[in-house]
Image 1: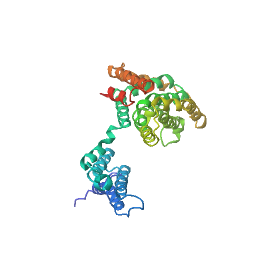
Image 2 (image 1 turned 120 degrees about the horizontal axis):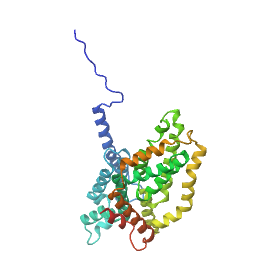
Image 3 (image 1 turned 90 degrees about the vertical axis):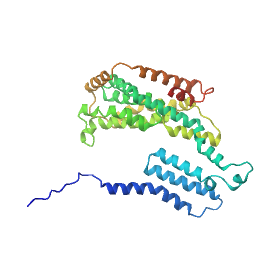
Image 4 (image 1 turned 180 degrees about the vertical axis):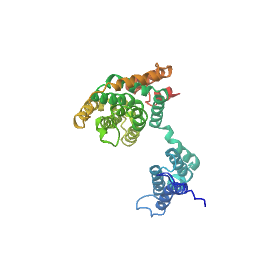
Length: 335
């Protein structure tokens, strides 16, 4: 009599049918929320088309939260739906009754109006610089150089991480991309050199200190530069559209500079005092950084070009904001 072999699924495995049902539910959720709001009575004093627009807007936000599809696809879908249904979502009866009003032309103009916003292009240009850092590995080289020369002591290693984030921040409008894409892959290799492991008492040797410094440095640099975080640019555009105040890149930087310098200089030291690593000195870290730099080789032509472009854009943002739209330098150089 043959024994039946039973296959035990690996721990944590998800049934494909269950996964598909969950994905379909996540895709249907934004539509369900939007439709439910459409059937809610319009609040007093609010035009029906405005409430309908709000319903679609909430549906888009729900989609961005649960992400059944990439965020860009959800956003574009929302714009297309509103433009196609603009008669009920976008324009008032008075606007549609105006002489010479053309629904199709007005809807299309609204749909593409965001691409005429210089803030959007500034974010795009800054993201192109961030992609350049990653593709040429110049950001990795920069961080490794700092670790090589400052990494012998735990305190100076904290400053190396902070300064690396500071140098990358003006041209990386995403703290997630900056920290997760460049800084973290480097510092993740450092704790094992000290015998420090995550989710283990040995994390206090140095791993916890390094991670805490990296997270805090990203928060500081994201506020220090206008182009270090995409929401900074969007908030600036909102302020400009509401109150008409225009804040340049240089004005933002100078306003935050006194506090920013203080935080940059004090944060690694305060972390060292209040959350001290057990290991204070280790000669292996600079040696590891030197080996990694040898693997990268000499500074490449693309890295040199990126450095020149970055410096040029930075000079334009600081000294030429009155004559040149800030979005132009990164867009020119991205081309």
